[in-house]
Image (cartoon, rainbow, N blue to C red; front, side, top):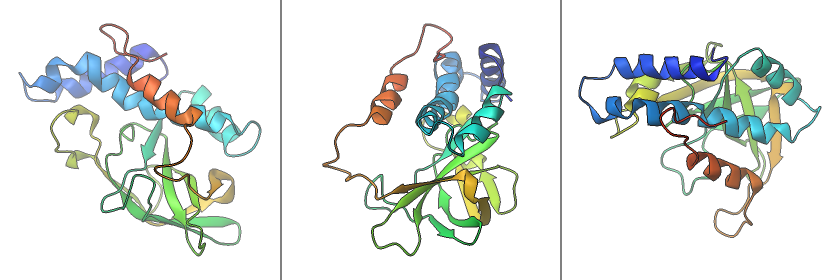
Length: 208
């Protein structure tokens, strides 16, 4: 777990050391790997802070204060737009079940919790939910070595598969209908995300 900025930098440097000598990614490790690995952590934490005392915020923040890291499992392939979801969350008595495949799962490397975005099954309005799962719980499989695109190889932003993963109800945020992908007004969450993308102090590349 990453407890301090020094821990985060040390983790990024260990990843960089495993990359082929002379690669562009290795040379840019300090400036790229650390903020990219932790970007999802800060964005997700900011978003759930708005829940106040409602779950899952208290449970997640208790772990964050103990040093836990958050990862994301949001992006999918073959969808109509970024807010379109093929991953499904099905509600049962007392819990939910999630099934799907996610790609570009930045921040999942080393995460204690993974925030999974999904479409709520059996709702005509295409309502969405965010579900928090553990990377080692039954049905969750990480394929982080599959990230083969140009750049950011050290982040291991690979694939996450979810097969009949059971999620307690207090770890699910029912978000209702998604915003329109083109006409929705700007959001604070979106602005915060973009601000972090552009905030990289010299050398360390850390976001505070």
